[in-house]
Image (cartoon, rainbow, N blue to C red; front, top):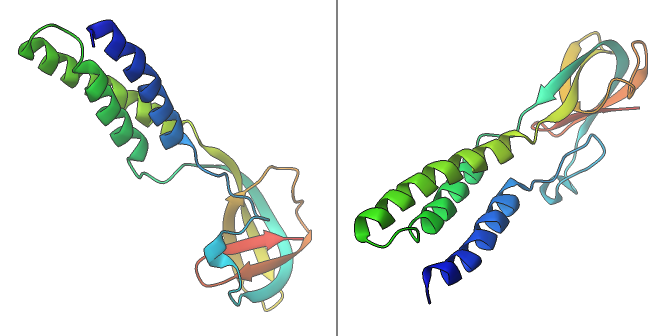
Length: 155
């Protein structure tokens, strides 16, 4: 297999790997993960005191960066005719792939809200969740559910 044949196979593999690594489900206040189903939750009621738009970043798992670096290194190692050229290509490919993977993962910010709720028991809680500014209004009566780890505000 010559150099051009290798590139034909490696480039789609690189792009596919980066896209797969960058894909994550976007959570919503109305979606639950399998691990959250059939778990008792406390329920409180209250009123919205304030709403602040926020930006929810993806957790820093380094999956996008790592996948991009590995695939970039593999693709880069196929460039050049000798051992030194292959090594230099692998390093350059790993750096470029890592940067691209990190950029893809970092571009997955989710618009969200910080909701401050005055509960009927007198306590105040603030909950950050995905959503838009039109989802709630100050004064809305809401339900606050929590399993001790995940807390949601809904109408």
